[in-house]
Amino acid sequence: MPLNHRAAATLAAAFCLLALAACDPQRISELQPGVSTEADVRDRFGAPENVWDEPGGARTFEYNRQPAGQVNYMITIGADGRMTALQQVLTQDNFARVQPGMGMDAVRRLLGKPAKVTPFALQNETHATWRYLQPPNQPKVFSVIYGPDQRVLRTQTGDDLDAPEFKGGGR
Image (cartoon, rainbow, N blue to C red; front, side):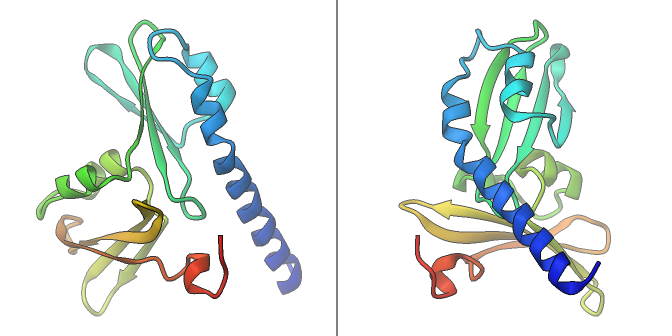
């Protein structure tokens, strides 16, 4: 694919992701815990990125809005097929739960798919980064640094330099 077509396709995909995330508040308002079914969730959010089995037959659906968005959702469906919880998981409380020694899979289960994963071969590390909004709307990134055993070495938080505010754009 020529470069200009590839750039156009990338831009179109990013626009679709942004449009999808912009519809999230409407989709969320249409769902009610204990009432909405798995079919209702799939109708509004589509196929989940991942499905996590929970105790007692429940399942949690992972819906990512990374890399263009700043949220990730986990929607739990009870054994009876009804929604029991809908959470935006990129929060300070969840970031604080990421501790040294934690495995990469456990972090993915907690935060959802990262916006970017970058291996640093010379340092023998892998950095996974999630984009999020820190209240009252400050774009930030939360990074988890893994060692060669895919266990957390440390975490860090910083400004989201890819956000429009840092690239001369605005909201």
